Image (tube, rainbow, N blue to C red):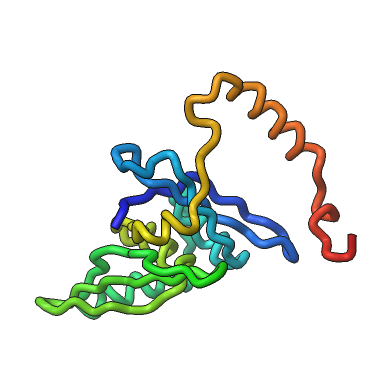
Amino acid sequence: MVPVTIETLVVAILPAPSVIVLRPKHDSALAERILPIWIGPAEAASIGIALEGQTHLRPMTHDFLANTIHALGSNVERIVIDRVEGTTFYATVYLQQGDQTINLDARPSDSIALALRMKVPLFVDEDVLNSASYPYDLIGSDDTEATMAEFRAFIESISPEDFSREG
């Protein structure tokens, strides 16, 4: 298991998918890799809310789940993205209740939203990273500023219509 952090979150407008990008922590041998996972807009919004530390007057779904886990005397121990089949990722929520560990199958997006609320570590199986991650090209690059300027210009030039399936 490799500990990861959230590198970035892109919340898109339908029909385009949102994406969360995970990256192994800097002390990992795989730190120069990134793992993009396409997620739904509701889950992206929930993750974004948690990343920004926002709260609502009434609990949202992932807040409700975290509250329920605590009310039942349980704690989430860790989240592990442990499998990928094609473009579908799978995660396991490790729940601790007394001296018993309960493993729950979950979508990575829901697991990440829960992990952020419960402040628990997030891991990715090394085999998943090896098969589904990409190099983080900008690390150590001499032309990082030029590349970023080009990327910003591209981002500023696109519109939601560019993501429509009709074109």
